[in-house]
Image (cartoon, rainbow, N blue to C red; front, side, top):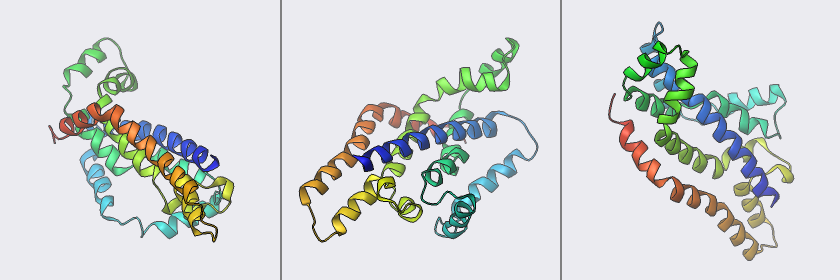
Length: 209
């Protein structure tokens, strides 16, 4: 139950961070006009080619410098800087929305953030649901980062905790199987509830480049 509570806490915080920052970045790249917008977006996309293994040691050094080793901050805070995939996904969706919506909102005196919050974000529910499912799956099943950053048993997440249970000499198969079912249920429930938005979000995202 401790492993489960840690996983829920980290996943919820990461979901909030990813949806907020990726939607902001996607809206900025799609609708706002600023110098070198296209060049900055291409640089952002180019970072996809950098394998995560290359940045593993530098990021660990940063977390150690900040004093976040063996804390959940190392797993939560980076999510509030967004991801390339999430920013690209939402940028493509926002580009497919007509500019007339923004023009009408500006005439009514709405600010750029107000347009994003009151108009664009409600319309982006399908893409937000798609990103939420991908983020949920990636964070909930993440094994490498908690294994690297966490050392105390009471701070471990469910995947790492199950692995530790199976590595002891006294392997309790029923307990491990119960934990495996617990780790599967949230992903299954989230996909069933968001399947309609998931399919629609993937379909609409590629409509405009």
